[in-house]
Image (cartoon, rainbow, N blue to C red; front, side):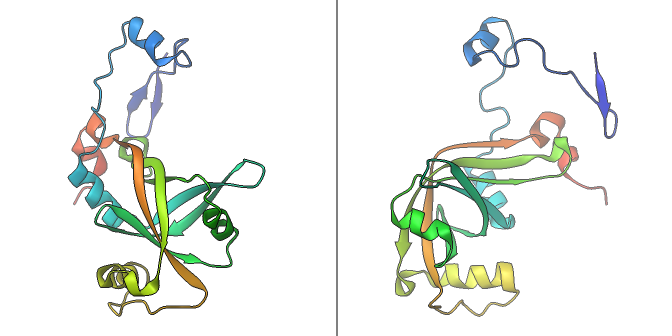
Length: 182
């Protein structure tokens, strides 16, 4: 049975192997080229430079995930977040909680792309934050090139992704799916 969505895109609903372990799907003859939808490093850098919201996951005291949207600047392989000190996540981060993230974009199925993974992180003193990060944050979110000044109610976080996965569904349906017509 086919389901038609959007501009005539036909999708086959998941069959009985959809919830089977990865190896079982492979043994059943479904071939999925590894990395076919993955982004290259250059594509990831470009994507992270344009996206505005990172969803940051931490663990609360009971071990439950807490996910919050935060603004970020991507600079030299790390997310830089101007973190609000009174936010509950700050205490969790100071205590050494595990962290994970996702940054994704696209509205239609054929436009979806993103990156997710675990994070190693450290708080960075204001005087050690690169000027490019302060200026980049101001440009991205406040439409000015004046670098952010230190603020008592914020602390900088440098978060480095580990064990990442990326996807770009536009590759599956052709680049035209990810672009609007002129």
